[in-house]
Image (cartoon, rainbow, N blue to C red; front, top):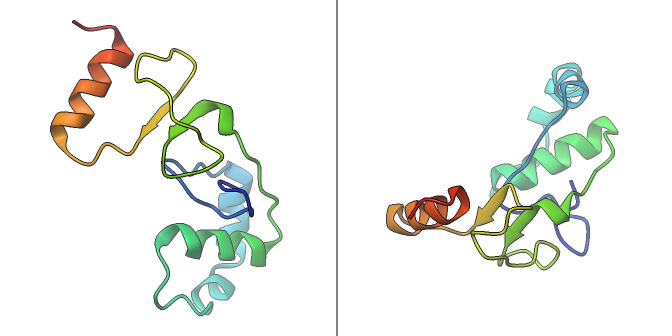
Length: 104
């Protein structure tokens, strides 16, 4: 978790470990009963994991996200990133993919 400077699940990608999914399964009712109305899926999952006692792990160096202060914004050709965000339309996404894959 911890995708921004105050520790919120936020950004281009959220990854859950097998253990986190097991904790979710064991706490499903608790998660369903959270005050989720008005939340996005990222906020709901963060609150669910917090309620289940699952610690956050930030991997900010692998994400290029100009909407997240900790993510930074890298060029799509940067070989050390696994996610580039935001790319809101198919044309932006395709151009970034080509740059990241080294396709001319």
